[in-house]
Image 1 (tube, rainbow, N blue to C red):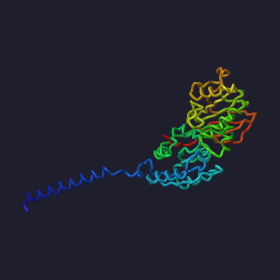
Image 2 (cartoon, rainbow, N blue to C red):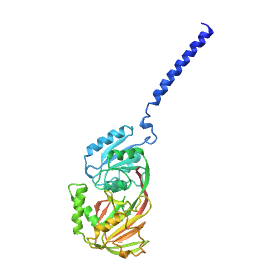
Image 3 (tube, one colour):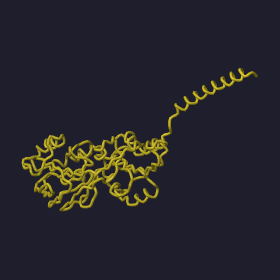
Image 4 (spheres, rainbow, N blue to C red):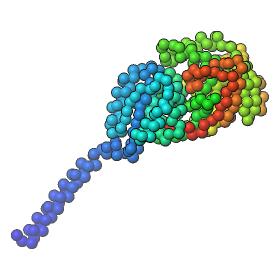
Length: 340
């Protein structure tokens, strides 16, 4: 074979090799990178805690949806039922021994409270799939109620620290109340049927029965002695179901929003609460002329509330035993929440 023929043959082979490489490269460019190689999901390990009685809806559909979505990312996970007694003391040991990175709570505010209160000193992310009756914390954090969209947020892996607070050494992740709203929580807990309609029914019944209680409130901003239908101390901006009670509340500002719905004509109560919910009733300073206000609204980092009439108490929507005095203080950066 001549030198020229050899060169031509080599040239043809090089051309064929380049064409083959281009085809291979085009094929590679169309291949999707497996989700498990994404740094967001690398080394993550989930526990899903599903409350079988919270809110409404079929929980078996939810667990199937969780299994299908999370399996696509090759993230190790386990689905377990929540404890009826709300005791999660052993969960922290399981998280540390098994390398759990994310605890996902499928339930309402009461379930979130029970779990988080045992995990504040544990380096783990908290996720929420809202399945309660109110879902106040989730909605305040921008977490949607649709499970698939809530799972999108959990899988995205974005977290921020969220404040909590103690009331007589009991933990609250979003809100507590004394008086009318607490009585609603106590009566709602006795109902066999859950959901928004039941909550509204119980609220209306209690509205007509409601009577004011005496409260004495002491904090660094000032002191108050008031008769009120209820007092609300909030880290979240709402009761739940997007019903706002503390429009200026932030989940991470180191402050508690205190709302006092004073004794007034019951005809005025709905209008006053609407003014509060819509932000017409602005934040106040206790040194201002608040005596003329139907609702007192201020912020503080700690306070003491005397409750001589033993007004009922709820914490994060769950009824709890009341007391004659409540000492309340913020817990800054209490836990890490997965959110949008």
